[in-house]
Length: 160
Ligand SMILES: [Zn+2]
Image (cartoon, rainbow, N blue to C red; front, side, top):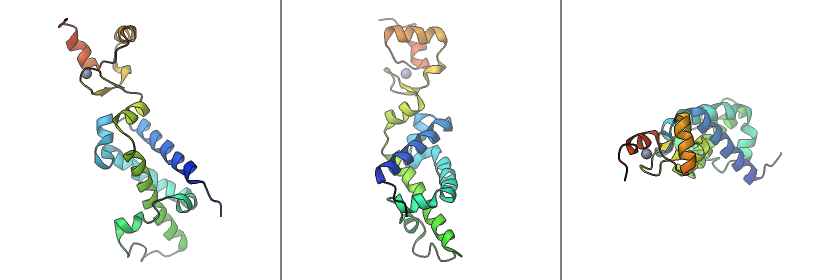
């Protein structure tokens, strides 16, 4: 049996989560809602495919190997017809929980960083700097300022 060191496994889970975040096209606010908000569905899809291809690594390394019982109770494996079935099912719940735990360790600014979004200095909202027109991007870069498109626009007429 190959034993993956826990640190590597944890890093792998975090990298996987980051790629799910980047590919989601979601905003920071949508992602950091309790239990993953709109990212939830993607987490479960990811666990569904990982538990088929990576179940051995997951079962050997996940700190959440008992997550299935927390979700499904003691009878969770009753209708399994094979050992493969058991391992895949255990791995599915373990890996979903691993991804959720990894997300739980991230704050708004960590999620913003993964998305490449900046935090507006005025309103505190996260925004995609690519949403600014080219001239605005250049101005903000010169001023070393992080400002969302809304605040930039409303700040233009009130000059104090
Ligand atoms: Zn703003």
